[in-house]
Image (tube, rainbow, N blue to C red; front, side, top):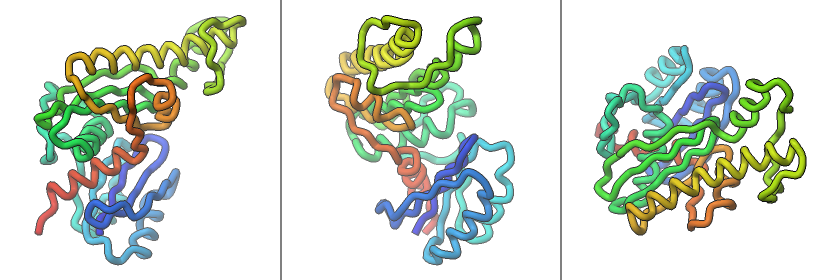
Length: 243
């Protein structure tokens, strides 16, 4: 069995896999190493692990996993089941690359566009040859709301309202909702349309905290895979696993 650990800036996600079979997900916001140790004590069949971390210090967790399992620490030098054509691989976000690997594992032999809608909206392309081509990064929905409040003198901080559907805001709150939510939706739809013309039959996969917003709002047929990054990390583990 495999343990996949993804340490982000605010929380940690972990998942257990038996081969490629999903066994369960766990979320931690603090005491990461202690929680991982407890999880391993309850899952004695875990023999291999992979750790992806953007935290400044994940040394304790790394040492724990190295002591208890065959550990792979994921970085830009890790061997991948896809070809990374990004010109600056050392600056490529681990979550972007892992999500791309996860998407490719679901649609091998076909082009796939990955929309990771979280703090930032990241859109990345893997072509039908299994080549990661790169993509785009823009502010996420919450970041756009905060930017309007932070960088202006009078605009209020507005929270997302997925029930807001109007094309024309009739007061300041509605105008901000309109500009942020519809603006983000039209932006992503524009990318999807452009890629669909260039790569006919391309598959569209959405993940991240705001995935449901785009899944419902985009006109195209969308595959929503919330656990895409964890699936990708498991694929990387399998690709690198020693017999």
